Image (cartoon, rainbow, N blue to C red):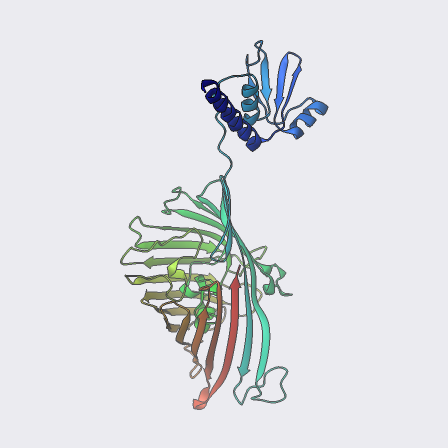
Length: 463
């Protein structure tokens, strides 16, 4: 009986070792050459060594052979097999396997390694627009004034890479938008291309951003076109916030998460230009204040988080609220567009989210100075509010009103926008269908006006 027990124990030991060997590979090759012993657990490594005499990865142990020879191994597994074969007791510490995680979440493919993190996403927006012009307006391609017209288009088709490389505080952003290509600027396909360095190594107190990105001006412009509650941004936002620039920016936040600051300088002549178009720059600054300090202000990306996403998908037991002040100065004088303008703009905006209610508004004070002629003011504002009808946050209704004055030197030229919206969110902003109907009104002298209406239907998917 005692001999039987010993036999069973021996069989269990052999089975355990055999299982270990199977797990690490059954290949084993031991070759003595030039006073050394070479041990291989990888057939490809042995074949390379047999032809070239060179090893790839090598682990060398002095005096480890049966007669004190130096033994060279191609892996830790080879050491285990050699020790088992030669009855050597040794704990072999294996290196930690490299990290490689691949997941899909929230519309993005996310790849994580020990030295890098990458998010990859594609965003498509397919839109139908039906224009209902004023009786005095004839649209291109129609037979007469007042005739309506429908159009399909790919509004946006964007491919984006973002993440960090080498260090978590060294981030980058790269984005293409294929439908943006035009004959006047083929380079407009490139929207974002920037490097961002957090000098406080992850604390977000002081960061430097260099490349092409959106200036820090105007909440709705800074909010992604894919995170809007309406089919697209307000007309006022498009008038005052001009979009991406190439330049340099500084940004950060306070330790109590109540204050976010941004400042930058850029060419001032839009995106993907090879040179500045005059000897002046565009300057931007923005300060945002969050009274509660309960939401993270700066995210990894330049614009992200609940303050730069429309609709209330984030608030729980407390409101999300912030106010901001903006500044922009851009001198277009001495460019090639004729009687160029010099703009100085002050802007103010607010955002509120609580219990499925979302509200935002922006007000702009703009002074414009032409190269010839008198300076004038051109102010504007808009406000919008939406409400998610169900607790599952799928159906949303909204209303928007905005107006701006192109020039206070001209009477009866005010322009207004009025829209209503209905949205269905299947995967929040990552998969949604939106519709809105609105009127764009332009005042004319004599109490008349031009009223153009339009219906827009858009679907979006982020994957």
